Image 1: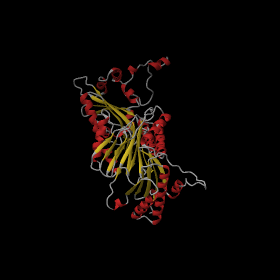
Image 2 (image 1 turned 180 degrees about the vertical axis):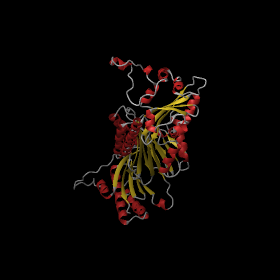
Image 3 (image 1 turned 90 degrees about the vertical axis):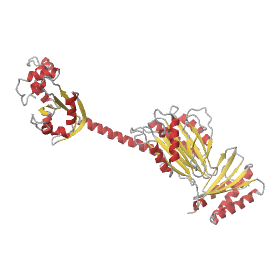
Image 4 (image 1 turned 135 degrees about the vertical axis):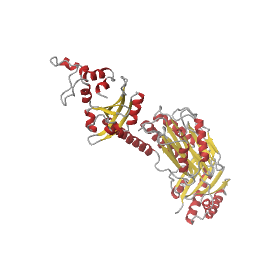
Length: 549
């Protein structure tokens, strides 16, 4: 196909350019392109030229874009401009493209050119990599049909290649920058979460956090495990809505506050109530949800309070799965709501799952459907807490591309059997008051601790601690009173409960004082001690001794 016949198929100005140049000679090897109308206006003495008068070969030859023209179904080469020749080398017209333009096959363009030739519709491929002896870079290539005008013509394809190396490299630098920012955001998020979960004596606990999306925004999901003493453990999980530094800042402050409030050993609803007021002070516009739960192995129950958070899911030892729905209140920071605590049985062999909404919430689905799906997944998830975390993520379709942050906290209260059960034992004694209560308590503690085969020194310390705690309860408390001894694989716990809610405090006793030394003695001989109010208006005072070895 000669250039004259090909130019007849070009639209508008391109066709007129080609027709004007059809009878002309080849353009000179050098020299400037003739001036356009705008240039003639600026230089009145210059020859008057128009775009219509420019030879098409000269126009295409001077373009910085790479241009090749083929004709026929086998794409015989008709023309390549200087820019194409500089990149791929000089080409011989007339041969099929597979021989004359091997670069088209290397770039995978021949099937595309076939489509363009048959359909008459242009096609574009973006950012194809080109590597030659003279050029390394990326080009976007557009294949446009050259329409058939004469009956004897077969038509052709014009290949137009634009150098987009700078754009591709800029996009890659931007993607790399975004990857670094995302990695930094995830590191920040993880640094605000516990670096290592506390592992209580009686429980097995694991958690997982999956950041959402690929952007650099930090999420507000968080969790924590806090040992409270006397064998009790607090579990907390929360979600600050939205993403970004503000959400992360609120999350970090709430998590720090929870640990501080937990040390007061308050009931769950009182902790939530304090968090509610704090959240309003931190940022009244930021919505946050939270559930705070406390497990007491001696009671075999999980007490909890919720501020707008999703229900805890519990699987009993027999495989029954249920959700702890009540009570719950509005999200943190709303104010004006009196939170209350609820409880759910959680004995040996049971598992509790706490989670954020990213685990179950899906666009277009009701939230209850997500909770039901989670319950089904919990029913079939077995193994260690960490294994259960991983299985729940897989079962609910959470991947690295998940849009929302996900936090999951799994707690197991294992059943003790065989030799292991000997390390986790309980004994209790009801105290009726009177002068015989203290001797009975000492005798009871002596017998139990000796039967547990503790060293003599630890038995003596335990008996002394039990005696002082009982004496304190007899003097300052009211019935009913109870002495409880508990051992784990790591510590001995001694606790006395009574019906009075006034908590003892350590004070300095003067030499002439006949009382006030009991708590000081306990604080001196024990590894830790504390007190808390109990449901029903009473209190519990406890102390711990670390076991040798």
